[in-house]
Length: 407
Image (cartoon, rainbow, N blue to C red; front, top):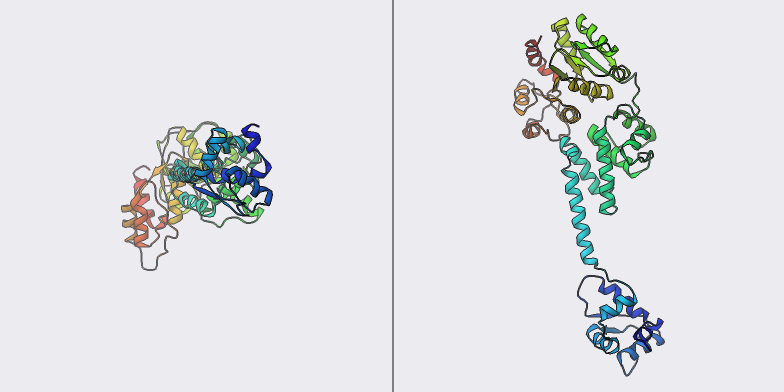
């Protein structure tokens, strides 16, 4: 009788299975408890160990004694016998440590990713993902989902692409990757809700609206951007409209459709001033008329038309300078514009804010939820310290005086 025939019996199977489970823990094991065993199982164990009586329903087996017996039977250790009869041993302790380290590496990678650091409001998104377990699958699957979400966020605003087209382009050709109910869709929508400081959408209509704010399926006619003083070169319709309005001292509203049909844009002036609020554009036109320096207004969060125009201007050699409100949302909008275009901050430092806040009267609005300003780490602390929002209109004269140098 071979050792395998002697040991690989149904009556001894509970012994080998229990040993396999315990030895795969990755921890030191000196004895194991079996059971409940029927009389046949007890008899087989007593026979194996050379006992003079049945060991009972729940016997405790000493591994050193068993090892001596097995070496006499087959010249193999307990581990060798268990491995050959049941299969390779695991190491759950090491696996758990490895999983923890892999998950910590995942959060470290996600928190320091360039998409997150460019818009620090997304740090709250990362913290939410970690707290709620939205990425609670294996570290490798979680990282793949997070990487897809980051690719989508980096590509937004989406220039009016339908959501399935956007998904197919960015997520391994899967046109349904961003469909309602997918983990990836929920992950990206959570990021957008954090960025725009709005509640997580609950209905299909709310989800479509938030995707629309991110440029997915933007209507080519309703997505517009206000400009003034843009002497654009070229024969495209957008260039002609902007040039004619600049010569007349009027603002122009360019549609996404016009900008898509435009092609490359040339600009006589090398600097373009980008502002958040239409009132600044109106004040500039009132003061400068047909001498107004080149200006673009995002009208709050920039839509697809605004981002497309700014990218076209940058590609044509323009230097973009951005100014917005000194409050929580204004800082997030500024970070978004800077992350998505080549714009640089214009009079948006901590000192600019302190100088402007000194002019405020008591009872001014508070800044709301604050997030870091990537271009000036001290700005967030100053906003928190003074707890006062400075709207762009408060510093309009300062901005227009600088524009006067360009007019």
